[in-house]
Image (cartoon, rainbow, N blue to C red; front, side, top):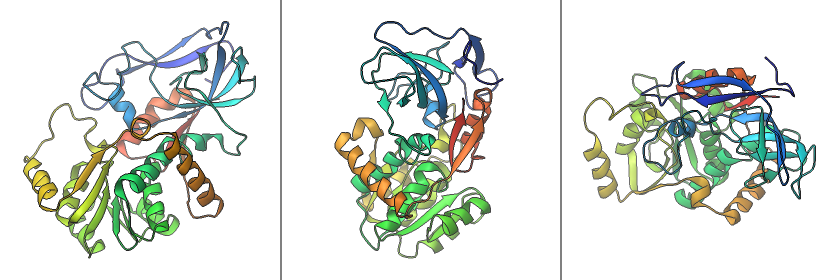
Length: 342
């Protein structure tokens, strides 16, 4: 079912999931293409970003952002082409970064829309040159404050944020240890991304392997997963360790508290005794345009110099977006997940 000019396919929230989203969570609908009026422009989606935070937007629990309404289009950042425009500064054919979500067509008045310069790979604006890359850069450098010779550990190390964190850590002279799911991803993290080591979190002896890979302890743990990885890291944290927190993907589908023993005393005792600085952040709430300009300058230079490698996991077709989303949550993707919509 390819994208067409006379219909708008879209994914809407049918119900709030309890646990892992399933076939009843979203509806795939088809309707008329919206019409842009005076002072508006019509956007045609070309690429859609799939990100873990979207699971949180399906819930109505208290959070940093308004949840998607029942019947509303699933939220998401896109690269779109301007199909028609009555908005100053935007012309037909421009490529833009917008938040129009999981649909083919959207109308915008230009608020929150960013024009993209001519680029060879527009989808990279959703990854290494966009929100995930900025998250890695600002979270590590501004909160983690790495120093040469320190050990940096990051989970989901083959994903868009984790892969970038480790490569920036190496650029700053640190030892980079990744955690990923499976031998293939771990090989990629070491052989292609240049990490010093990568541990498979599925291994029975994961905790022992992590300890061996960090003989001098851990100075920075970039937290984006939680779960077993977090509790494997805690005993290895050095005094005055830093922990930037941008996600807890291992727990996103939990309907309540995780099963098993209460490990909050271990967490709090470690924070206290090791004087750990733990800071959560939401990238565009916590950091501003000066930070973004620093990121863009650094990242464009590192990519041009071959210091940073990047991998995408491409899902073809908007109709396959939900399957791609579930695969991302389950860890079956390899790299930044994007949907080629049109």
